[in-house]
Length: 314
Image (cartoon, rainbow, N blue to C red; front, side):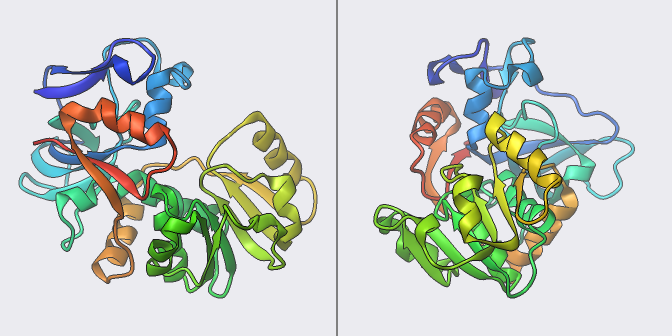
C-alpha cells in the first residue's frame, strides 16, 4: 500500500511517499481503508525529532493521527463495528499511522462517522476537536454562561473550540487576525479581537476560561484578565508552563493547565452529535493528495493555517 513515512528525523524533506506492507489488526482493532486524514502540529513535531523520546528510532515511522475511512476487517474481540462501517478515529498508537491507504485503530477510540459529513470533512475532526473538547470540559470545567477567551480562534483547535464553547452556551470571545474575523463570527463567537490591533490581555473584560490554542499568550499576562477562580489552558507543555501549572495547584485563585488530549471514541460520539445537530462543522483551508504531505507540513509549520489541512488518500 502507499504511505508517507520517515526514515530519520528532520525537515519536511524526510517525508517519503512510498510502498509499505499493510498493517495487521489485533483482536481489539479495526483494519480501516483510510480515505482522509489531516495535518496536526504534533505530526511535524514528531517528524522534526522533538518527541523522539516517545517515538524512538524504529524507522520507518508512519505519522498521522486523524483517520476517516471504511472498516475492512475487525479483530475477533470487536463487538461494535463490522466491515463496511464508515468511521472516524483519533489513532491511539504512536506515531499514529494515518498517512497511509490502510491503518489499524483500537475499537475503543473509533466512532461511526457523522452522517452529514464527507470523509474529507470528517478527517479534519478527531485530534483537533477532541483537544478542544477535553480542554474546555475537563480542564476548564466549562459551564453555561461562562466567559471564554479562545486565542487562535481561526486555527484547527480554535475553530472547534469556539463551536464547542457555544454548544455549552458560553459567551465566547475569539482572538484572530483581522482577515479571519468574519469566519470566527460565523462559527458563533460573540465578540472577536483582532490581535494585530488590540492586545487581548489589556482588554477590560475578565474571563472564566482562557484557552490559548497557539501558545502565544502566557499565564502571567493572562492572570489580570482571569476571574478569581479562572483557568488558563495551553496546548504546549513548555518548562515555563509546566512550572506554572504545578505551582498554581498549591496556590488559591487562578490556575494554569496544559491539555494533552487522549484518544476517546466516547468523545468522538459526543462530537458526532454536535455535528449532526448542526452545532459544529469543519473548517478546511486546503486539501492535498497523500503524495504531497511534505508540502502540507511546510504550510502547517508557517503557523497561519485557517482551520485544517486535509489529506486525501486517492
